[in-house]
Amino acid sequence: MTPGIRPLIAGNWKMNTLVREAVDLAKAVVAGAGSVKAELLVCPPFPYVAGLAGMLAGSTVAVGAQDCHAKEKGAHTGDVAAAMLKDCGASYVILGHSERRADHGETDAMVKAKAMAALAAGLTPIICVGETLAQREAGQALEVVHGQIAGSLPEGFVAAGGVVAYEPVWAIGTGKVPSEEDIAAVHAAMRAQVGGTTRLLYGGSMKPSNAEAILALPNVDGGLIGGAALVAADFLGVAKAAG
Ligand code: PGA
Image 1: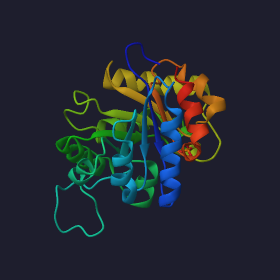
Image 2 (image 1 turned 45 degrees about the vertical axis):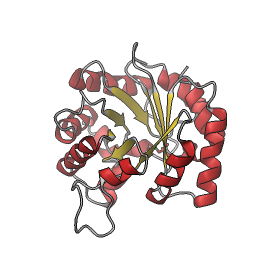
Image 3 (image 1 turned 90 degrees about the vertical axis):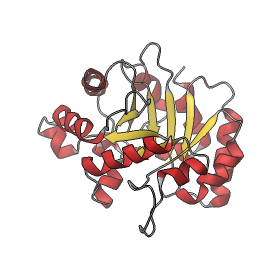
Image 4 (image 1 turned 120 degrees about the vertical axis):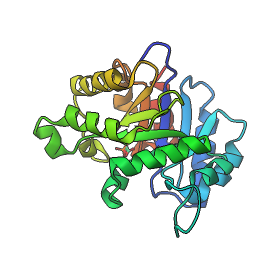
């Protein structure tokens, strides 16, 4: 953790949950959020953003989305603009997740354009970066993350409170986690690059059993949680490990 920075525990629900499940999960998170000191965020699929934001208004749990388009509006069938998400009650948007970079060919430049749109709409971007297994094994992790941050963060990102999430691609959904030394090394390098105030999250197979050790590392200011965010008790277990 970083002194003076309030941790953020964000749930990335990805393409999971039907309406009933989403409502029940959100309710269970709110019900258990009372004693949590960290800021809590859930990022459901697009169709549930408005409903959950309405339901969670006035609670301590914020709602975010998992992507947005770079343009303000227009002829982009199937896409969602940042202003729409803001209007629906979202406060954050995850951008450049490795699954989007892989499934939709999102480049650093595209992520940067989306982040600019998010900032213009008043959303806080959470920009994801992280190396593949081949890149880690080739000793390129720090270089890859540095390049992604340099290419994906727009001007004004730090001043607006933008968040960066380090998610090694090989640790996402695999149960594999980098060593504490490796997480600390990447986070120290990210801190040197983005400065002292930006929240730096770790993501990739984070769960209640490893959260305390990861969140205790210097420059780890919270987590971006996938699989464990689909079970309220696990998500809250990670959140409680943040202090
Ligand atoms: P995971 O996903 O916790 O299931 O590894 C994290 C993420 O992709 O954000």
